[in-house]
Length: 234
Ligand code: HEC
Ligand code: HEC
Ligand code: HEC
Image (cartoon, rainbow, N blue to C red; front, side):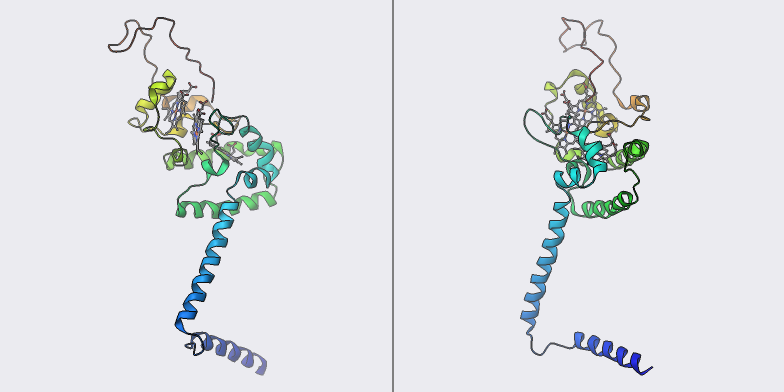
């Protein structure tokens, strides 16, 4: 048809025009326009990435997060502590490095699908899915050697002598035993899933030393009964 022919030749003309050297624009002007457009795009992209990393966004955008994990997190040490250093959702859940961060953001668009299809939109549905969601996080943290925890914590920055005895014992040998933070520190910011069985992780912890009959050389003999083993859950 004549109509389509006009149409296609129109497109063809536009295409050719796009590739024709610009007579009225200098290369310099084109470069400047390109650079400015690039900066604007980059700025917008970056702003969007950061806006979706704030506590306000993660806590308040959907009630799935607000009513469950956010509410729980508010009573943990990562929300409020003596020194006032706060770890927000993105500190633990979004990588800092550029590549992994973009990948995580793309993956998060799948969570939008979950939201709009109401996958976890009630307390019951959330709890029914919590084990699966937690396992995803555990797998991810194990695979990255708890990379996000290490944005703030590290074994080398720990003053181990000031830690509780059980912490000292475990941290001293964790690396050589191939253990990472999440192997021993599950449920630090949220309630653990009902299906989670602590016994599964028992082998991750350093074996408790035998009851001190004679104190090991170099360690002061305990004057009082040995420290309590049943420590509170963090
Ligand atoms: C944004 C920094 C930050 C990130 C990320 C972070 N933490 Fe923390 N963590 C802190 C701060 C600050 C404290 C509180 C220190 C204090 O006041 O003693 C803390 C405390 C802790 C405690 C001590 C709890 C207690 O009762 O004494 C544990 C265990 C812990 N973090 C584990 C983790 C693990 C595991 C991860 C990764 C999943 C992680 N943290 C990620 C900053 C962070
Ligand atoms: C092999 C197990 C294990 C690994 C791996 C491990 N921890 Fe711990 N951590 C413990 C135990 C056990 C405690 C003591 C808990 C208690 O007493 O309630 C502890 C205590 C802590 C404390 C509190 C110290 C104190 O005395 O107040 C912090 C902070 C902490 N761990 C952070 C980390 C971080 C960050 C990592 C990863 C870099 C990590 N841990 C790896 C077992 C481990
Ligand atoms: C200190 C690190 C830390 C912070 C801060 C944190 N999380 Fe988590 N989050 C975890 C870990 C570790 C898991 C894996 C499950 C577990 O061990 O509790 C998890 C699991 C989850 C899950 C899966 C469901 C579940 O309960 O296991 C969701 C959803 C989640 N976090 C959202 C959030 C949101 C939203 C915030 C901010 C309001 C937040 N997290 C803050 C460490 C953190």
